[in-house]
View: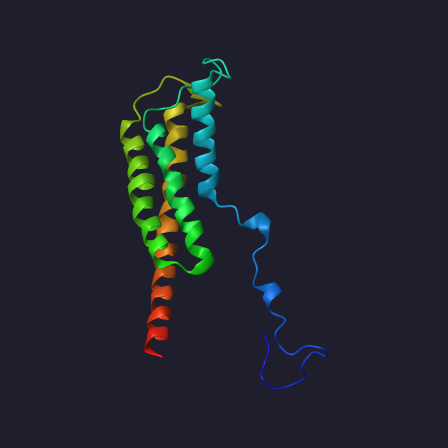
Amino acid sequence: MTSRVGPQAAGTDGSDFKQREKVAPQYQMRQSYLVCALVCLSVTISKLDLVPSDTAAEPYKWEYPYLISCFPLVTSSLSLSKHNISYLVISMISSGLFSIALLFYGLYCQGKAYHFIFGWAEVTVMYLVIVVAVQGDACQIYYSNKLLDTWFDFTQEKKKK
């Protein structure tokens, strides 16, 4: 913390804060990109028969439309560069429709399974993965809403001036 009074570092005019405001590139990748990449990989491997079917399970029917959930990720990324409110609204709506709704549908369609992954029933593992994905998408919508409120207030202040 700094104060307005007191000594100031030599050789600075106070404008050297830009480098501290940047997020390191290794922390910029989001959990949602990883989930979409895994679903894309699963569908690609099964459709191209790259791995025998006894090694890798066939994708579930709800995983195919879940690939559309890459669209909200792209629109939210596009909105960040120029504070574009319309892209952020599209991202929030499509994230609810294409991500969370399809994950709940997958949770509903997940039936009894007799397959085991690392000693756990496949259904249990899928439920855990879906719960984590829903939490990630819900956090995305929540923070997008907070960001939208902030951007909207900022644009209203600009219009008043």
